[in-house]
Image (cartoon, rainbow, N blue to C red; front, side, top):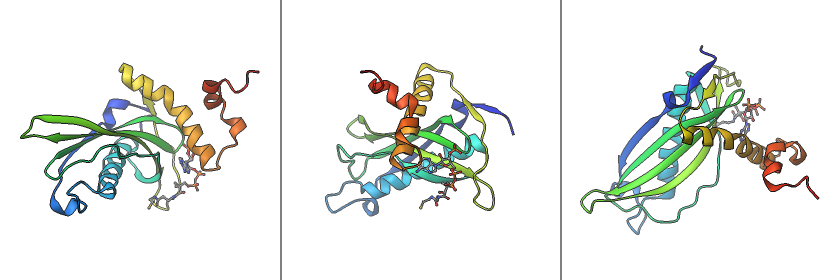
Length: 174
Ligand SMILES: CC(C)(COP(=O)(O)OP(=O)(O)OC[C@H]1O[C@@H](n2cnc3c(N)ncnc32)[C@H](O)[C@@H]1OP(=O)(O)O)[C@@H](O)C(=O)NCCC(=O)NCCS
């Protein structure tokens, strides 16, 4: 198992068409269906990075600002931003396209966390992520603060230990 892998090695792209069975009674894509697709595309990226079985540990807040319509083509792109010990943060970007109308919009961005596990479901170490592009570096930098925030919210970390997170609010200054 390599000790490090490039961020781009985990890039995963999934394309779906919104069919009647994916929609609510207003003919818009159901939120739950979209989250299911996000979970799959993100899990594949985490698997590519770790070459392990992965489980979803958390999904950061997802908001639904605008509907995705029946017949739209939905493209989900995922990439591991940073790995810690056994966990990996995955960034997901969703775009919806009305091909006949030549309209394409970015509808969602989200971060999911996956944990690599062995056959018994026990967390296992994963390679570090090496970011290359400017965007990958920005995502990598921010990942530590986002990890601290989600671990504090999950009551897995004391707020006073979230040093990098606190620093952006200057909470230690008088
Ligand atoms: C995720 C899981 C493997 C963590 O197991 P655990 O016994 O709590 O293990 P640990 O405390 O050693 O934590 C392992 C890693 O998970 C991370 N983690 C645990 N809960 C987390 C959460 N809510 N958000 C983000 N990361 C989390 C820890 O930070 C740790 O990361 P690190 O190894 O990179 O430092 C375990 O809770 C699990 O199996 N959950 C169910 C997963 C599942 O079924 N998902 C589908 C839901 S239907």
